[in-house]
Image 1: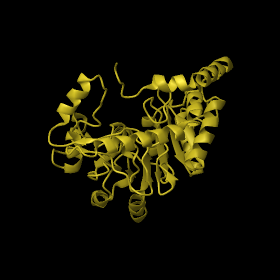
Image 2: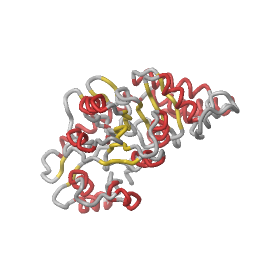
Image 3: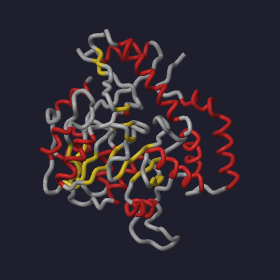
Image 4: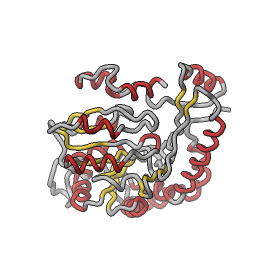
Length: 342
């Protein structure tokens, strides 16, 4: 028996009838692009997050790109973010012509270290992108305090944190924009690529709707250079069905994480995920730290027992070949590099 990293088959079996019926309905209506299921999902997600507007897009990466553009960030601007994340976070910054400025992470949370951010701010800094890694919210109070002090935009990368909460509010509801990924392996995932941006700003929401649809609000009339980044109606119906179960599934993840923490608590070389009062960690990934150079040994044992695993992330972004031109070197972000190795 092989134990997969993410078992979407089991999840599908539990909601098979609803999924099959919903997909059949969309196919029979033949309204595959920005159909009514998309607008209904946008309303439901906005309500769930506790925010005014939600705009469905083609992926979590596009959510970041379009948010940056909607906030007017582009050529020669600087955006501060973490090097310990999936490449999409920094990739989006580069795609709009701006420069990613990396900042080290906190040893315990693996999220961006708020005490280090201010040192990275220059006259060119326009925004901060905190990443709620693995489902654990960042220190949003500290980040927003800095943003107000220096008049910076904030874009939350919520790709791994759907349903997570910081002091009673959902991630995505704090910043100028919150960006979600619906990649199949996420807490809330569709059956392909999909993403969404949430915001409380009507003007930003309108720009996002225009940008996702070739720069057009009225068909064949174009107000700006845009993209083809529309959330498929088929994906929207899948997400609407799953959204009904998301809190139940998240609670199951939290209970599983507590069990793992208990079972692993007495193993000296293993550091389990942290939890803080007032913060809801949704465990998109249950990630352990393995010290004393024992990670390879643990991985080998898992492999021998047909248990799937993954390393998130084996090489920080500042050490990747694609970002050599930024001039970073090993040792620049010691906490992030320690995390990549453990």
